Image (tube, rainbow, N blue to C red; front, top):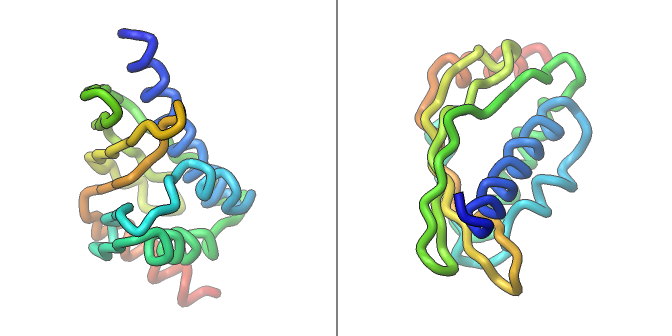
Length: 143
């Protein structure tokens, strides 16, 4: 792996660390730091929701963040692969949701852009996951 591919991999891992922080109740700071904040970012979530532009994307993560509690920790990412094309790269992998979120295993794709020497997410997509949707509905009902 080239040094630049290593940087893309590290940025992707920071994004998944941010998801873990968010769902374990440690807040949204890391999630906000993982993204470029532009009108051109997009995200597709396991619930089937699509968001376009930083305001919408951020709002969707804020909703997921409302479910954050220490007992919800335990997500992971595996099988990450990096594909680099100049200042744009994408990664693929398998996200394993924590047991609280149904332990779903989702194929994921992330597109990153390098601006000012820093790699950040500009697009995230995860497979739709009915088990995760059911877990979120249950969490919402329980308050």
